Length: 233
Image (cartoon, rainbow, N blue to C red):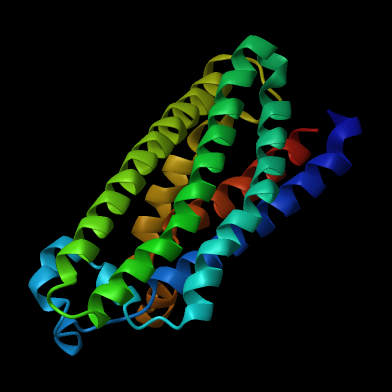
């Protein structure tokens, strides 16, 4: 593993940068505050919108870049999963490859989901602007689009959950390049840590990072995988 230390550092920094860019995109899309009372056309659909009304007032640059940043950052995350694979490889290809591939698969689907927020926001903004006779058409489009996004989200979360548990169990039960304490660190546990940490952080900071929790978890994960592998080497 010593000969891979420079590559481990580089891949870890690239993955951490990707997670930061992704989180900025999340913030662009989801950290806005919106009072449904300010949007009379949206009020009858408040329950259906379920918080997406916050995108009604987003300027186009913020909506578009909020979606695109995650798409552009995805290849950087893949560098981090190469690192994860290298760390698990001493346990054997058959055990190391499946969780790495599931993380990669989830990231590819995640790029689709992130980009899709652009169109979801467009539906919300259009719904706020069209007259009452056109609203049923917009609502139908919104519902179908959200259903596709939820299906993609479900697949993404399933892959990440299985890969995270596999990652931790492999470190705990098999010989890998990761130190044993890394068994406690995976994207799921990092996300739970962030949820707890949010409760004690200043409100201004939690407001800015609204919606970015999972990518902040990836940031924590990639920093610790890098530190773990380098220290073990």
